[in-house]
Length: 432
Image (cartoon, rainbow, N blue to C red):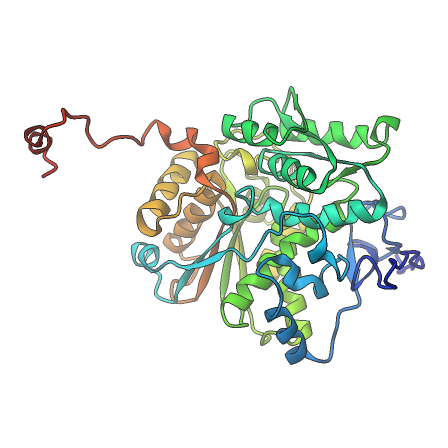
């Protein structure tokens, strides 16, 4: 289908600057049709997903690099590359990002990695997951569009991120979750004072419900961050790519291992890396992207291994509930990226996830939630099966805090011994 263009009607703000910064339009990822920047997410021509297209600040990489480095220690240092206004740092938000890139030498030795290993630890965000990044961008879009309620369908982390961001910005929030989430995530989503609604069913059932609600009069004025605001929301994940490259001294790693839920994070990290190359901020070099799934919800991994281009939906059954999306919207795009970059998509079972959580904690002092156990477990499996070169520099993502998923490790983790308060008892326990 030929590419069509719809002229943008995005207004300038009072300062004369576009409220979406360098963003020029929404563009269909399938047919290329362009639309004005608005709260829509699907192409009217082919029903393909929309994403933000930019007029990037080309031509002066050194000046852009200096501007970024002089910015705040959060995602807004990359405002020149995001769909946000230039004055975003002055607005009420949680200012996520600029989390640690940990040189994981102990874990590298354990796994036999000689080329260097880093953990991008996003548990340091305000609500302790990477979801604060995507919500921050969606919130700015909601402000511009005059929306009054922030909402989402969520496997847990996003619900907390939306609740916290809405509370900070003075929005009403109403978020929807599956009824069987980990209790820690339920509490964290509810504590911010917004409405929290548990839906009987899986995440995919919740997501379908939200898609119906957005078309109902009830949903008027609502910003569903991962539905009608999804094109903007997804751009928040690019900041992971930007930070990794900057924290490595403005260069790209050889490999990245990234968890897959909907697949949006992986695809947007790749988009961010490509933008850095286009802007001249990093040297153009090959890199490989590996996707990580839990065996109990691994439709993308199954499609990759079978050589398919279509991802067949599954019913999730895994302890990694934050990744339990049986019909991942970006699955086909993940397959394209893994194959284009020479990476792969792999999965691990629940026992391997728990072992990997403990391994990362024991070697690097990082307590990851189950999604982090998936990425570290998959990293180990990729090395053992020869799919990832241990002599290459690798970055693995931990996207959330283990305190949110205590149930995953609580049955196998506890006191080394319980003793009387005497030195003799300590000796008797064999701990002296």
